[in-house]
Length: 431
Image 1 (tube, rainbow, N blue to C red):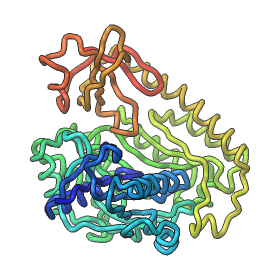
Image 2: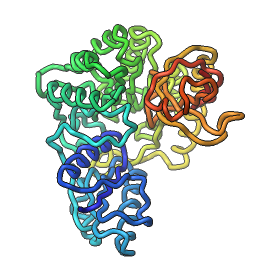
Image 3: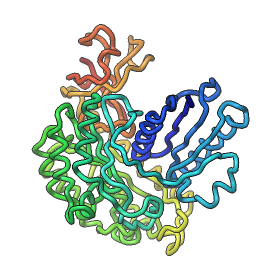
Image 4: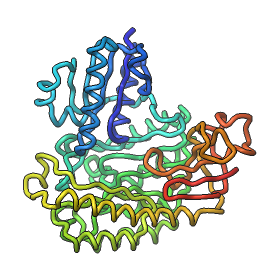
């Protein structure tokens, strides 16, 4: 019986692909080795790497993972190395010639199965509702890699969510390249709101969280449902990328600065207490100092609770690479990135400090050993409805007076805690 390890690079959408693959491998009799297992310890016959090819940093990380596996093969630690995913899809001609030590190459794979082997903690899972993207943003290679938007039928998604709930999943994170586009190809209209309502009816699912919402033509019914249904977390991950008209037009985003600001205001108004997570790009072609100052003003006005940023990276064959010059010098990109993140650091700190003293319901992800909390050798790591796993800060809960014999017994359980402290990323709390 072959022992196989699947290594996942990149985003949560890749993670879902790996989880479907693991189920198929399990059904075919393979013994699954955890991703955290060190190859030097032996016990692995084949390594399968699911690669990311989104931006330069992600590509370099995927190549490093492949080289590490190849070196393990040379040293006799593994017998076979296989590679699939976005990077190998994008460079399907070049990579096999440059890395002949890899035994098998595949591109992006689709899996006709609802079953999965979860690689997340058992109480939360990602639900990928579509594949590909019909947008043609100037900087983005995803449509070149993943192809056009294809929605998963609603019945299949509801069935998969029920299976996950039966496995003990309590939180679903809804993901896609563009979640707000869901349903247009299958049903002729956007049906994300209806899908979310049907997911909320599933017994056992307590929290549902929305990621990767595109701003153009954002479906307003989603905001009404989010305001009315307690299972739908007041949390939206919406990558806005910029605020200046010139840059948004050159990015080919389909919205201008006024529409972007109005959408943020509408979300704040229609969903009281909503937490917004966004990503922005600095140094995109067309961004002069005036446009960057507009971006800083936008962040000051919007006060995003969560914000990440990237420096523009020219990706071959994208519209931006073919039609624009990467004109912003690297040192200017870095300086703008630093200014933006310094601004956001203060906003994030103020948002977190405003929660001190409040009572919040949290979901415990794990127990950590260490001295992060004074006088304790371990602590609980948890999240509220306004923190998403892996990308946001966490709530560190003092284990004193916990309602269980051991902290480990509380993993995957809900607790009501009082927030006692905060920095720009994490919070502390006590039961």
